[in-house]
Image (cartoon, rainbow, N blue to C red; front, top):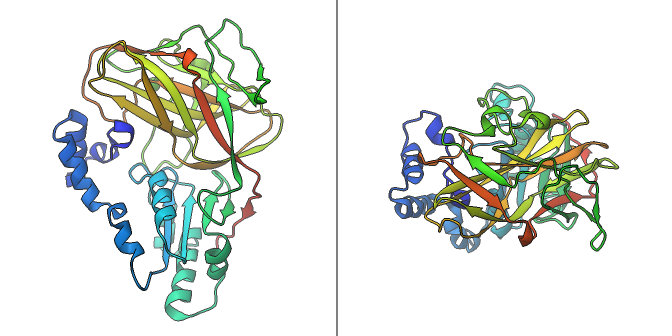
Length: 365
């Protein structure tokens, strides 16, 4: 509800007159923030981890959720799963939005998650032999590759098979440069324009025309944007050199960045795209930070934790990082125009998770 001090607008925008929508509205306006968060903590299963872990007869737990669930945060689910001290536990993260595509299984059609739920119940309630036993023993964590029927399996979280590559951000230049950090051997981002500031106009920003254009939960098509058409006055775009081979990104990307806001209140949104040779980007994951009552003109260090993902990046594609100042999914009260400067002497770095694990084709039944 309030990750990185940013209200999650999903419930408020749904028009659902629930207590959650009221809570989000309080967070957006800054009213009773501590009271709302204390109330949310009382509802969270994380608060009762010690009670669960002290059970004399621990239950068997199966957790499943969609990558693009706008309300339930998968990073928190993974952290909860890691701290749940049960021997028989499995978590699966799947392609899709909220109740889709698992809703297909509710009407009796074949669907991967329901297939596993039936097997789970067959084994633990009826004693029917099942391959669920192998999952519990060897592959407790399953990450579906976005846009495919394949899945990565790991024995724990965080898995040993995930490693990180550092992508450093540098001041923009007139011409893109394809350079390498020879000391670390890591790729770095070339730049596409001179601007080093993000500008919020008071009425919106480049997000209205590209970096993020989310649709309803019923629209299962990926969010796309042309990197060449983003308005450089309102958004900063960084791109890697083309991938020399196909790679699999799996895990939680992290962006470490120093910014200087011109006003006490500001918001910075970060998006990661898979970009093809024509500049068309497909949104992979995103993150947001909200600053309130900070000192204008003073540097602030931000650590963006993106939503967990697993995706195959084709050869010759690029990664693009887009920074912006407005997104309707994140709540914030009306505020005057402001700008946010990026401090490149602070060594801003994007840490990208990759894996050498081999994906497995997962049957529907």
